[in-house]
Image (cartoon, rainbow, N blue to C red; front, side, top):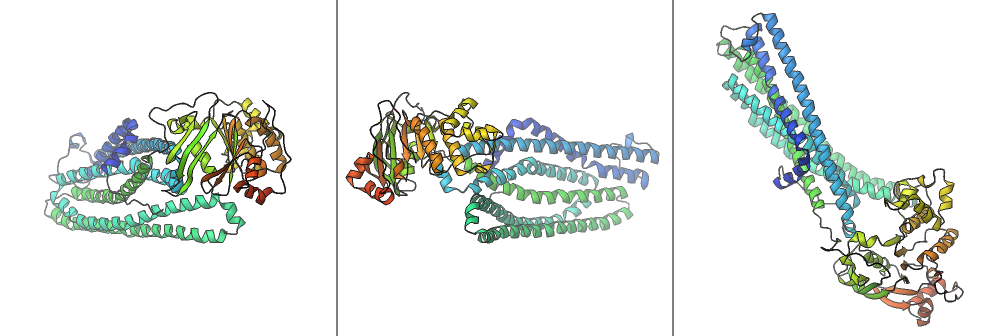
Length: 619
């Protein structure tokens, strides 16, 4: 998890990529900037109205400074003050509308842009090969799509516009203040170096805290995802207390980092307020002497006090926005790094289609390693004829499941070739290749929804009639019809509420609903009870006939009727033949059989009739 990117305050390359997501909504962005510009200009009107009211009506002087609105104001004090009050109210209402409109449009732009970014992230995550997920914890990837995208949204929807607004306000304020009194403006700016120093110290302090917070959040997400998914194991082995202690440490790191940031904010704002008050005290002393000497009016002094209060607020905001920008740049670095991750398992430049009709599957001197040259498969070669059922057995870690993962192109081999119909599978697109396979894994996985949608799994061409037919073939329909909602019976996360055997039956129906040309069964009935297994075997015997199938099994009694059995040992194909041939060879298979089922050998079965079902029992 130690992958935190510090991030720059500004990275033009990353900013351009972020703004690309806002570009489709540029009209909203432009209108929001227009409202922002108008609102920033309105910020200077309030103090000017106050100055006019004081100098013209409340404390009139013999030579008041003229303003553009003097010609439109009444000479009567009550009428003039009413006019100024109405103008002040109008400016405030217009400012309110501008502030709301600008905020609404920017937040709308940010949400639409982040919607597009999250969609791209999800689409890219679905394309990445399994090797990427082997190297990256799921919790870290969740952080990319949630916390990091939120940081970009905050920068795009509020941080970027707020910085522009603060700069505009400061610019307008300085222009107007220099027009009113250059001396008082310079006096107020004299405090600015101290504000800049405090801001630099605050930024340095809170930057470290934010970096620790982001890292702690990523760790919390990863830890929570792993331990909630494995809650059964935690409770089974009474690991709740230990898990809680480990989580407490990560949670404490997050809390301590937040406490440091709270401390930084705690002293920063009071210090800036104090410096602001110090500047206003200087204005009071300087302005008082200037008023006594007749060089300054009371209205100008009152206006300067209001301007001073507005002058330091944008500086405080800019200090905070610095951290938002830095957090956003760090988040952008991680998000775009994920988006830029190459999809290794991809279609060739001119992808081919799997040939129609009966085809062979061939492994030709295949070598494969998950990492470097720690070979999992070594020089494996075999050929599967159309309609043939191949069983693969061997000790744990012998490379059985790896064979099917390579056949489905979840990984690409380093040496050799895997061919279907004489064509290297790397010439097919992964989607085209996998569309011809039905796969049932040992650990069934169901998604939140209902039973019907878990069987259909988003395939529009599979209607409810086909779903029911598939459920009937694996003896699931009786269970479905006994439920109040039938196929619409709700399924919670990971299939909670259904037994393991029921989930496996749904998995069978899911594979069979697509009427696949090839079947891959990986310990497919290991999770069902004996009675259910016998019913599933009967259905599978019919379904396997005519399909090229590869069956992985640990229980040797379930694959004795396979057309051919491959025996894997330490990544190599050591034996191949029928059950009787392998027993007669008295090799690895014979030893496995002795260990497992030497007293449970099935009665001999005659050859299956030509054109009849295989009578194969699958485990």
